Length: 390
Image 1 (cartoon, rainbow, N blue to C red):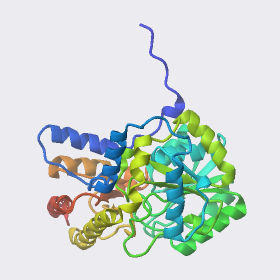
Image 2: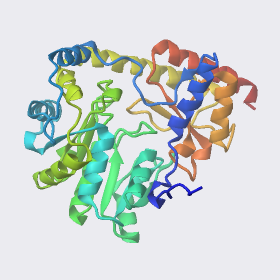
Image 3: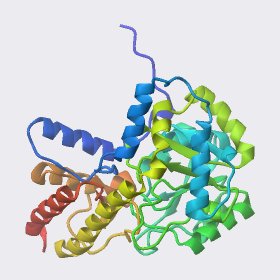
């Protein structure tokens, strides 16, 4: 028999373990087990009714053909108004590019901004898809090492140290962060923006968790630099994960390149999703109700984790995650999470997904689910850990 075609080296990326955990949890559910899902960063609430109704109306209208590669003009204008209202920033709608989720935004921005071999700074622990996308595109990853001791927060001085070691062409940072939930202070974010401008480092600011803050508000990097490339999404705050819709705010000099890339890589962002997303900006009450659910879940974990012997975790400033030190129980978070799933029916994500080097002592808990489900997950986790506390 003729052997199958070979795979490329660029396809040899690490698995996304959170998705592996979901697959294993679903297999157990199909076998009749009741599983509590705390592994995915997905809102437990449905897409707000206002948005869904707009989607139904678009379906009834039937006008769902190709759109412009840059996205619907009216949605780009609405996003520009959003920046004026939320951050007091004036941007032209011409700088807004609608994308197929934030994932599509990263692909466009990284291809537009960097040639093969460029060195990009990302945090570790950090979102694993960053390093996988960079690898698949032939880009180099430079790791900003974060830890409990430095509050899991990147700084301009960390970037400077990496840049001195070997020149950086870019930096890709998330604020609030996944998996830690930490936020970069406004002062530190301003320092990062200024340093990147000074050193001609292209700064991509991932702001997909904006709106999901609890004690202080996140600021957009656009407040500190017109050169920052902003990525945002309707997935998290607006609970539109499956609609696959995000956006980029870029300098005007980037827009035509992004348009050309989108024309060939996606043709256009999803027409139905764009029409529905127009209603997102008038769904404030519904999305804020969801945020209050996350806030109560967060408070529950803040109260209960120390009682389980889990006293060290990243400051959960935003998003809907706790990144928790489990070193008193294990140094093998992958095995720990599998045992927790099989024995207690709670799906969480091992820290090695976000930090292959030091993540064996950490796990990520998502509190994005319904209150009753998160409460049951916390209770199951406490009961499972109780015999192991020593």
